[in-house]
Image 1 (cartoon, helix red, strand yellow):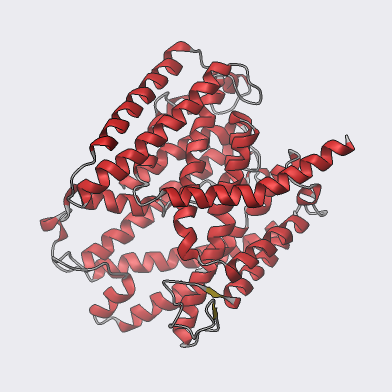
Image 2: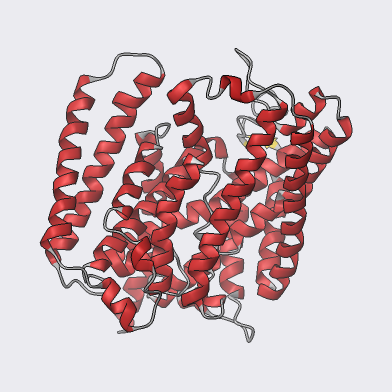
Length: 475
């Protein structure tokens, strides 16, 4: 529930912005409109990590599960050794043709258009809901002991660790914003869809976790356990196999949902002149067929070649950065900097706020929180940097809040766009969302930021630069 509440802070920013800018592109459009072109490109990279790249990673995970089920691993390790002697499921340094085929199939479904995609997605979604409902009911039916006698056995450190892990189970709700251009009356439906998605995910996730803890009460020294093993321990072999087969059959839904919004992001970039026009070309049904196949081909190559043991934390960092860019864009737009730089001081303060909050979050995680959780000495230098950056951030927040007049809500009321979102959008909420999300990133390192910036520098930046140069020469 703590992870869901923290995620709710960012979702409110997405609700407000999706009502203000009801179009495709999600974080990319919000960042471009509220913070400028550079932030927009960074947001696009973050969305690509969150959607397409993570979907390719799920395809590799599904391939590993399928190979384990059939007892054969048709992969080629990088060191040309047999599977298990140079690569395995945990260290996936291998070429994976099954993951590539799965990603390509999902690309084909998306390229067929939204109607075809809706049929497949709805069928898989109902099956997924049925499976989760079964887990909840079967878990509660096998309730043993009383987990409330030893509630939160690992104390606050355990709660923080669990919250940090479970927070990323809620990512993907912002995908709704990427599909805004396909919705009827997106100004009203997008905020409602975002709220429904997050509440539904929190409800099902919370009930499933509760049923698992009811079925397997905590004992000292126990390791993490999933539903498959829990059912096996209860003697419910049929339930164990039902869960295993169900997960194997339904996991491709995640791959499909990850591929689905990627063409929307690249189409939005093409409309802004950052990518070639081919990415925004549609067929008579309004589907970005060429853009879908271009994106899907790249993701298929990633699924085939890239070891996701390296990229998982980078994907997580991209998700956090996209949330923080959205919150920062909302602050800037509230004070009149949406679409044009009308208040340069506010824009500068917002950027300084992001920098100081990032320093505060990183130093708190690495120098204070992590040592406390590992029962080690707190680093004094980290405490100094955390204190200074926190004071600076609070000063900037106060300067923005009391030194400038907001205008976003007045404009929203003028255009009839969800004036009730005023209550959801208090001045503190996007800032608080930034702080709490940065505090959850305790397992990330500077190396992950380096890889993310490398993707920006080696992939997106050259494409945007070449296309912009060609566009300028024609002009």
